[in-house]
Length: 124
Figure (cartoon, one colour):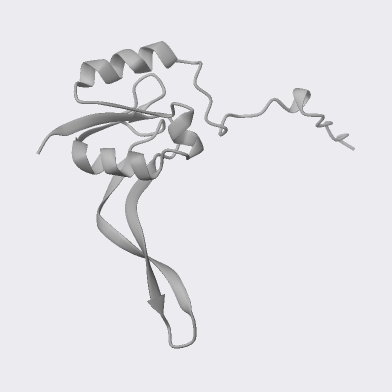
C-alpha cells in the first residue's frame, strides 16, 4: 500500500468518507440511499498540534483511497481552492504549504467588523 501526506488548512480539519448511492425500495417508493465504501480519513486542521504554517499535517493516508475520494469530490469548494494539499513526499507538501502561507483563504477567517458595516454599541 502506498501512502501520502496531506496538509489541510481548514481550522477544524475534516472527516473524509466515501459513499456510493444505490437504489432501494422501501415498499412504497424507490429511494437513493448512500452506502459507505470502507474507511474514513480524518485530516488534521490548522488548529491541530501537528500544524505547520497554518496547515494541519496528516501522514500515512492510503494513496489509492484518497485518489478515489478526490475523484468523487472534485467539485467541493475546499478541494478546488487549495485548502488541502497531498503528495507522496512530505517535503513536497511542506513546499506547497510554504508557498501558500498567509495567502490561502478558507472562508473561516476572522472578519474585520469595520469593513462589514458593524457599528459599535454605545456603552450606556
